[in-house]
Amino acid sequence: MYTPNRSNIVQIQRNTPEYPVRLLDLCDPPDSLYIYGDIRLLDLPMIAIVGARAASPEGMATAHYFAQALATEGYLIVSGMAKGIDGAAHRGALGLGQSTIAVCGTGLDLVYPREHLDLAQTIGIRGLMVSEFAPGLGPKAWHFPRRNRIIAALSLGILVIEAAERSGSLITARLGCELGREIFAIPGSIHQPLSRGCHQLLQQGAKLVQCPQDILEELTNYPKPAFKLI
Image (cartoon, rainbow, N blue to C red; front, side, top):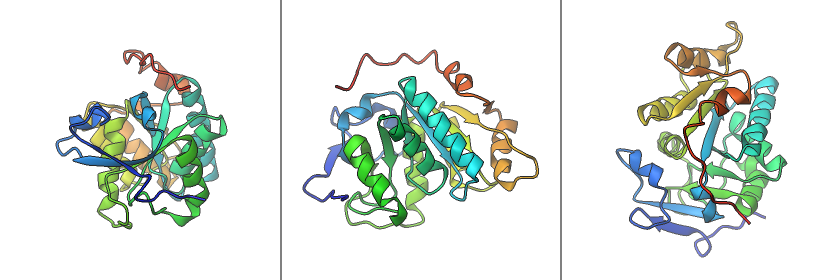
């Protein structure tokens, strides 16, 4: 059962060594973060995988596949634990026995969406749950753009798989671009509404991705830390 509460959720302050240095790239970094799970994961290189909540079966399979391939190469998959692409990415990494980070738009004693209760439980045991919102705070519309900026800042690169023209995934990608992160997008049919957001990103300079190697070759300039979980 998912059991984080005020006694086992850890709060880390911005002026402490545990605070992720990449968040300091933000103009408004959180004063503190609440975490539940393995804090050591914050030291690992991360790639975000984000996309549509109402994703197609093909999009879900693609997110699962890319998450597994990138996790195998040593990158930690970070996403927002939403329905659709986010959930598929988390499950892809977990399916290989790897860890994953979920950045949440609520306090960590709550699970949103409720359909992801089992997923949250697994991430809490084998990964890390992160939020800037205190325990007890439920979902609010303005929470999710703030969550997205944390996903963007933590990541070396952001992969968008299926996104409508106006979506939170595009917000995450654009924030990442402003922060100097690598932006990747998977193209789709011109007749598919969920391809339009990715096509916008490609027109704006995102890298077109057809396979995981397309991402890996762009990240060769980022040294991986000599840090390994035991």
